[in-house]
Image 1 (tube, one colour):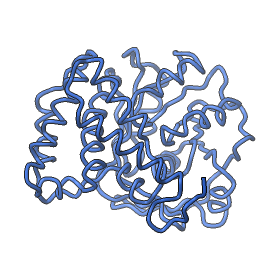
Image 2 (image 1 turned 45 degrees about the vertical axis):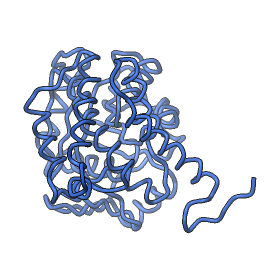
Image 3 (image 1 turned 180 degrees about the vertical axis):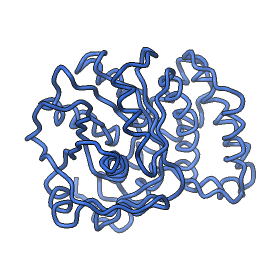
Amino acid sequence: MRILVLGAGALGGYFGGRLLQAGAELGFLVRPRRAAQLAADGLVIESPFGGLRRSVATVMEGAAAPGWDLILLACKAYDLDAAIAAIRPAVDDRTAILPVLNGLSHIEALQREFGAARVLGGLAKIQATLAPDGTVLHLNDWRWLTFGELDGTMSPRVGALAALAGRAEGVIAEAVPDILHRMWEKLVHLGTSAIGTVLLRANTGEIARSPGGAAFMHRLLDRNAAIAAANGHPMHPEYIAEFRTLFADPKGMYATSMLRDLEAGGRIESDHILGFLLAAARRAGVPDEAHEAAYLHAKAFEQRRDAGRLPGTTMKTM
């Protein structure tokens, strides 16, 4: 299977590297700085499930060409427009597109651009980060890659990817007939985590140890579950129970990538996660005060970031 991975950051680098180990003919579509890094040092992964260091094929943005069975989109949701432009020359009649972005709004955008039949549903559950030297650091035991046809069929292309990914070291891969429901499940817990950790600037354990913290997170979880149910995807009680336990654990260390990006003064998926859920809450008639506060908090942060008013930055003149 010929696979083109858009991006060789934490997520794309990890899963791309593992699929390469499993036997895929694989290339990374990257920008010049990352291409130079990979040319000099190879792709380096540090993981509890085995490290990796090997040379990889790269394709420079603007030089992509057709001939790929699958394009794995592993970018932040705010980079979707640029990602679409970058992969457009690589898409031909045989190409499937597997996005593993956070949220749901990207599905409609990709279907509109490339046609509904070409787009798969997918999600990744992993905690990883890219070190300054380009090393992909896998931070815990999360290593799930889940995918499927949005219409629920188990197609040959999904079966082929499942067979390949099933051989990959350090990956738990699953092809499923209910990928859209799985994506809503992820949005429920990720949205709860993002609202809580971004609004309160703390990880889940720190929130749980604070007065009323666990109850606050449980209210958020219930409201996001109600949003999913209003969109035809009620959550299973066992699923909700799992995350009620996580959000009540005073020893928990979970923090979203959105919080890490915010604290680093970087770009965040404010519209694609927080804004999407706020709009969905209002459509569903779900109480939205916390959703609104988190979204406004994120957008106000973006104003300060863009103006250079964050600590340690130089203020821009207006």
